Length: 436
Image (cartoon, rainbow, N blue to C red; front, side):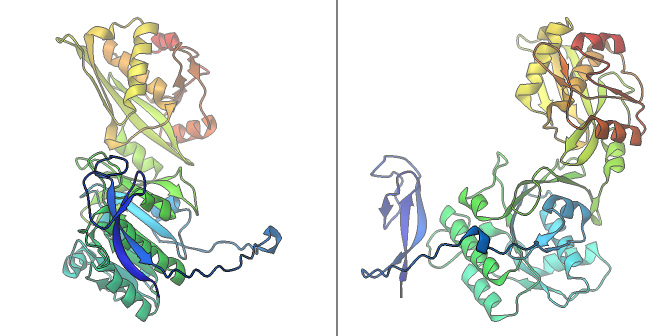
């Protein structure tokens, strides 16, 4: 039987050492030595026979999905959970990850014979129990807490008991294995602990949900291989100063990757928000100077969002450009286009641009709304009432059409907006002057 040992491997050149070193002696790179588990195998190697499988021999079947009973979460996952699916759930501290997972555990375990296993690494079972009581009035005995951070102990307990309905680990950065000497959260510990849980989940065909920490830059903490090993990667976004939360997926082997889920954080947990409620929340109207509504697409969902701009005289050699909720590079490009095409001397004005409600806009369909908000603030005149602006702006000031114009117009009309300005009625940016 193979014996497991720990070695330190350079992530740049694969040099191995029995002890940690700050600099790799082979390639000279610093801080690239990561602890890994290595098996010592006997010198006699048994070579098996490979049996290829022809495509015609593969029997395909429809993937069965279990709804989570949370509409916005099902939208992001693609109708529910798949047996053996491994989900990596990341987000900033205090954004509401544990709250959403507790609601998931309550909903999916109601009226079920199998329990949901909740691995408590960051919180005690008493703390999670208090949150359960705060979120629901229903009495549930179908949630089993495992207060341990030793991944081998957890896997051993899971193998000795019937497979649960769902396994939640909060969080993967708290897990350790005795086969490695690194502390919890180190690259080696995170990678090895996650791999052992993933192996169990695939073998037992039980959905596994791993909570992951993020860095100051907003990236997932730990090794990048963790994102490759899982089936689905979900990010929970939002500003702590706002109660709006966005659930977004960047990888999904069993569903779409362009859908989002929208929640509102309340004292009773996370409430789901539909398109009409979101439109009321992020912006009421463009009736004030510098305010402009637009319709952006996130997958099949159309969202009415408000872009706000403030243009004020600058008293510094280099005017400020403060941008929130939008791509900084693209927005600065649009500021230059407005200055060129509309003759606005923004080189001596500070420009502040924000998306209301803490929403982040990634598609170029909001270009026209950004330009309209800037020009409206500069002129100190409001845009036409109950109007929205949708269109992509080129460097030459031309307004290009965007995908799904009919669905955008329908969404705008559904929330009470009577006018939708785009490439048809504003072919160039210079035509914007006639609307203000």
